[in-house]
Length: 61
Image (cartoon, rainbow, N blue to C red; front, top):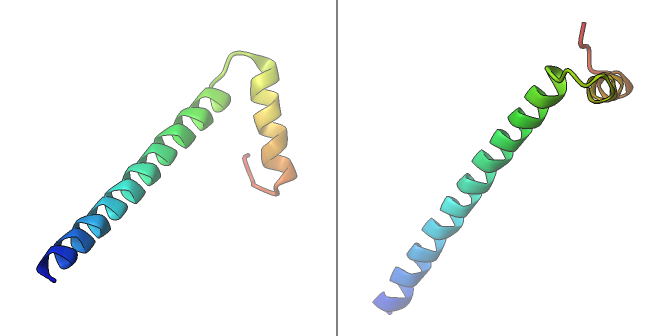
C-alpha cells in the first residue's frame, strides 16, 4: 500500500513539474515572438503583427 502512495505522489510531482516547464516554455516563446515582431526591421513582419493587434481590438498606440 505504501508503494502505490509513493508512486502516486511521485506522479503528481512529475505532472506539476511538467506543467510548470510547459508554462515557462510557452511564456519564453511568446516573449520571443512578441519581441521579434515588435522590433523587427522587416516591415512585413511588423505590419502583420500590428494588423493582428488591431483586428483583435488590442490597443497598441
